Amino acid sequence: MELVPSNFVLVACLLSLLVMVRVRRHRRGSARASSAEQLDTVLAWPPTIVAPLNPDEREAYRLLRSALPNDLILSHIPLARFIRVPARRSEGVWLKKAGRLRVDLLLCDAEGLATAAVAVRAAREPSRATDRRERVQRVLQAAGITLHVWTAGRFPDLEEVRGRFSQPAASRRAVSPLPESAFDVTDAAALPEVTELGGLAP
Image (tube, rainbow, N blue to C red; front, side):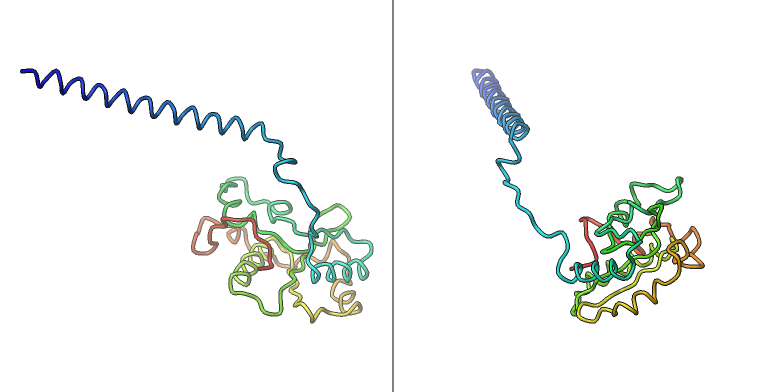
């Protein structure tokens, strides 16, 4: 008859021990969170300056600036910054699948609207970068924006660039953009999910 009280005491002790362990873990987690919140990010991660554009991108930028001095030229711009999808679509899905992709160089008119984009690809490009650029190109085409792909080491010369972009900025957009259905990013097979912010370079 004494086994029942003994078992009860043992179970009670085990439960008390589990509660104490959970309380300690919770306190440690709270302390870490508080410490992280109070952490001075400048002291913890001393910032250093890095070049936002690689050498090939800088060369492409200078070429565009020389050929088109009156254009607004931006670099590494996410698609979601200059393209919008129909309001009835899920913006969250759009951002997850395509909106966070970006273009290397973006040409805009005087009002800041995109007119064309330039992708700077490496001479030897990994398949992942190619797939990413093709997804970018599909979205840009649907929006009526032409993507010009320049290969490192084989850029067009100044006169070629002027010729390609000779028409007024506002008229550079593709004449026949794809129908609205082309913006449908709910098809996971058509536009794989983007899990990281990636550009057109590897």
